[in-house]
Image 1 (cartoon, helix red, strand yellow):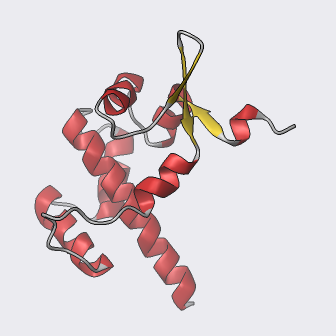
Image 2 (image 1 turned 120 degrees about the vertical axis):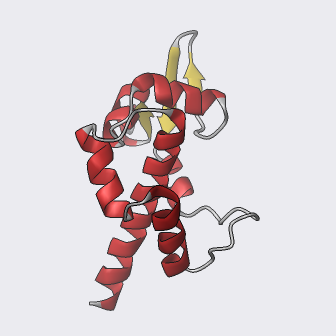
Length: 123
């Protein structure tokens, strides 16, 4: 039998992974941005597949950026920082913890991860 933690994350762990406040993650769950399951009356768990779902999501229809380079450039224009620098600033507390910034931090993390994967594949 596999351990529950192999497939599901506690809200606290998900929040720590992305340097978010737990209340921000709960709000994201309430808005349907992050899927979670309820175990009993009080316990929520986030499937580990949610990270991959976010990283592999299709660009929204209103997004004009389709290639990774275009998405990175659109992020720079919208947020004034490269994705890596945004993630570092978010984690250090330089960037305020708000729902909008949480969404941008997740986008930055996804872009940074995609760039890292691209660099590994090219090597």
